[in-house]
Amino acid sequence: MSPDYLERIAAIHRELGLASAAIALPLQKEADERSLVRIEPHLGATRDGLWLDPGAALAWSGMHRAATRDGIALELISGFRSVERQRQIIAGHLARGRPLDDILRWIAPPGHSEHHTGEAVDIGTPGSPELEESFENTNAFAWLSGHAAEFGFMLSYPRENTFGVGYEPWHWRFRR
Ligand SMILES: [Zn+2]
Image (cartoon, rainbow, N blue to C red; front, side, top):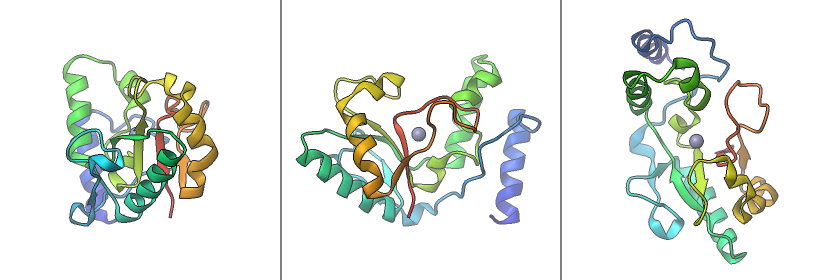
């Protein structure tokens, strides 16, 4: 991670009042946006403008096809997210008066989201509310638990994880 990047992250944290917050999540690299691959609706993208790192995109498309063959609908809810976008999201919650502790339980500080890398995906399935713990009760989650590792995807934030963040059955990270 370059000194410029570290200084940029530190400046954002100062601006948001996070400078003294205890952050257990590791720092993540921000992907070069020019290198990202757009995920199309036939590969499960649920909205416009979902982008992934090329390796993760290839792995996602393979996993999506395999799930489809098994009768499982995987939907891509989010992929790449920039440091700047993460800053805006947290600034918005702070502006609405949400307590910082609560924000940081569910939203990574800018620089610390795996979505910056373009290698993390939030996954949904039809009929299940997005980004909710009840996703763990779906056939899609059961399928992912058995097969995601074959495609290089790992659950990042299991129950009682050591990062101090909430359980996220929908969030998977591609590891090359
Ligand atoms: Zn996520």
